[in-house]
Length: 94
Image (cartoon, rainbow, N blue to C red; front, side, top):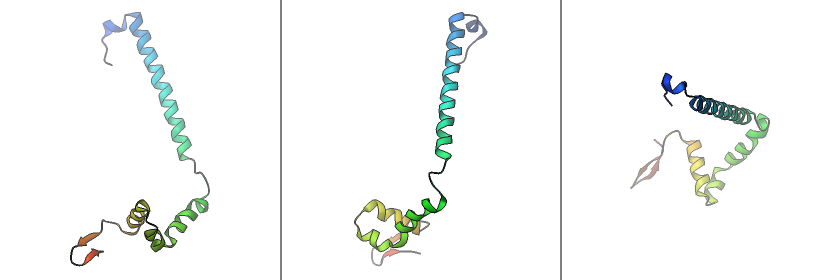
């Protein structure tokens, strides 16, 4: 969107750039509104924490449920790094 001084003297170019600036300002305001809406908590800390604690209350039950996504999520929450695996000994935690 670079322009020279000659291009800015042409009236339709000026209108084009003004319209583009106005469009970008509208997009900026829309993005700011979306950001503000995301920042608002949807409940109190206790209301948000309760389902998380219920999820982690019984990891064995989650692993037996067969939900692969939930099993991986529990492993990610429980361990900082990926688990190492030994063919002879199986999964290792250290």
